[in-house]
Length: 218
Ligand code: PCA
Image 1 (cartoon, rainbow, N blue to C red):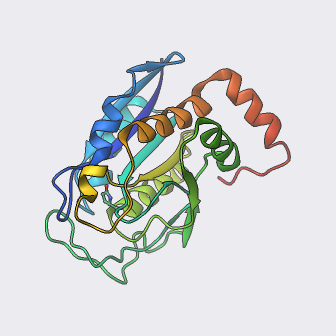
Image 2: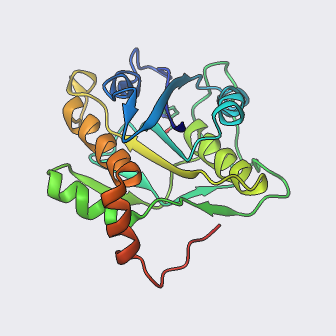
Image 3: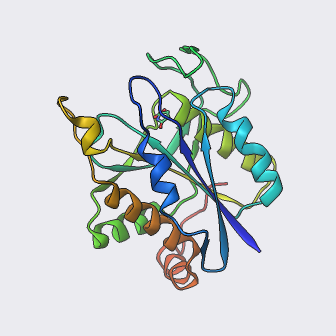
């Protein structure tokens, strides 16, 4: 049976919750004959991808969708690119702060998602979810995980598509702060749109028609 892996993150920094943990639990365990494997990863530069790697090897997934919390962003962000850099003001959950550091010393500067971004934006709009394509996943653990996953999949010639979705905080996380927030239902809808677009055989056909002539960067 084919598998897709969806990942969330633990809370980090000042936050006592990370909405991504609950969002992945709202997704069924099976969609269009594909098993959905869910895992919450530690917010630690050196451990996040290391926790995911054995699952990639065990399941050989056809799709990997990663979720992270982006405080301060008002919409769902589907990330276009992972950059080969660790650079953040914040320390990870083990106190490591990284700046001006390459993730993979011999890796490319950036790696693009393999998700069909235009199709996803159309479908998220139809569904009424505020969403945008983002050109940076930041320089913290989310970008690190996204970069390492894209790099591994490419280097090991895996067939998995890889995407990253940042979500805003929940309304209860924004109380008393001058920041945007989003109801969990929008986040779950957004993830379902991504999964449906990638796993529903009818949608895959539509995507193929839409991207004919576009080069898939691998
Ligand atoms: N967001 C952080 C790390 C974990 C998470 O959910 C980030 O954007 O890097």
